[in-house]
Length: 320
Image (cartoon, rainbow, N blue to C red; front, side):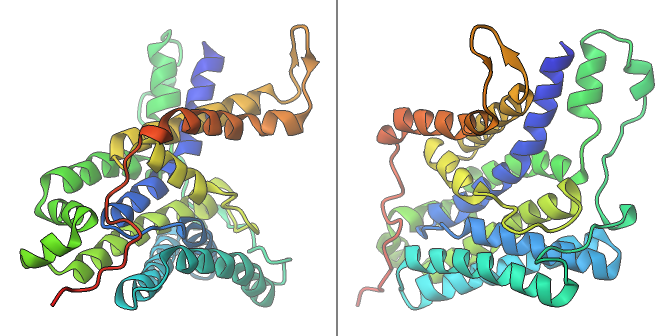
């Protein structure tokens, strides 16, 4: 039972940046803008938040810096793909390449630590929040393990994410803004005829996506590792995009996709160095690829039936 709750705890930790990135992609892609720049925005936000937290001594300043940089990159993506009707895939890939190349260069120039940022002191990073009564619940079977491993002991960003998921779902399906986002993503010409500014809605959607990417990057550097490490996003933006497609551009199924990948990732960590029956100890390289293979298999089974927003990737040119 301890192993099960330990895996579930690791699942929550690993899924948090994925869920934030998937919800960020949801905003932009439901508005009709392809966003493969999630990876670059997470990476740049991780660098900015770690740098700002180190210089200011405050994780909250780091979070603001990370969110600000991610929003700025989202606006650049919007400027190219919405204002100038450029190729959205090329714009997104350019942001990824710039983030991959520029972050270690800036890190090397500013901190002289091989492109990384210095390790953050305890007061500079977010810590786990422990709920009252952990010791009292420690000896209670099942319920105590659930309380100590699942409910308590996470970063504030994890709890923020738990709140953000239903809020985003409500925004997309129940709010006036969400209705306009979906309308613009499905038929921008009809939305324009009804008096909706397509460009304004797409920029706003990209703005909210940028904020969420900034939060994901902050989680990686100011909480999980306590510093920025080169390429530390490690494909999380692409995995989040895959989860979004797996969830057919709907928030809750996309979150479930992220949890599935994180669950497999947690299992592969537990399997490393463990001798399995019959096959013995499996090479670590093979175990590390398990979550990705399972994700591809899941995608192969579901993506064929996924229907993207009809206007996604199509530049909007106002009719006369």
